[in-house]
Length: 291
Image (cartoon, rainbow, N blue to C red; front, side):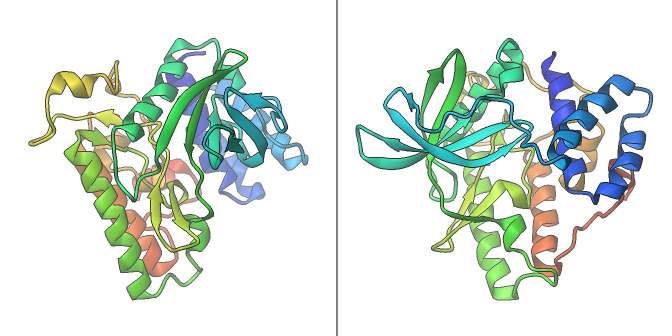
């Protein structure tokens, strides 16, 4: 399966799971129009979850050792992979291990994107960006070892009527600081949204998931040859990557993007924090993009 095909399935799956079950069929009809195979692949993932079966693409590694890490249990999972809590046996600290989905193990492009996530995040030393410790392997699968963050996602933290203004602005400033650091290093996140932002138990923001990150040549970003090591093979024009509710118009059109796409997404996140609702609602991805 190609990288673009898998990413398409991933994007649609994540959008669909956020909808009420009764709205998913119409959503899939619209977004997968003319591609019955795509619809069936996404529907299969959704069906496994709604039937009470966890949508997991890798075997449960709880209790096993991966390199110098003892796996303690799952802390997050979905159709696109599994994140485990583990103990670093050498440094005696708790870490999180993210595993590449088993369905992608034979796909070199998907592996490249997975490693790209680790490289992009590890290039950024910032208190509001999750720290990457290492890349390791298990049974031929790539694993990213990262900082273990306790707390909840921003999506979970936003109440129906929005956050108090003071709290929303405090969180927004930390997200903006993280994005400014990424942009200064020549990295565009391209998938900034509340579910990719953690709020720790201490209230600190941690931006996660640089899987769609790409390099962009910007003033002060450094040598372009160094940036290129983060993302071999830039996004092809016409390929839409990201989450519809937070995509800038140019990103939705599949055009090349720069740091302004993250600024747009940041505005959408800020709006949602203040109001408790998305800036661009819609029953389907097509409705959202039209909005």
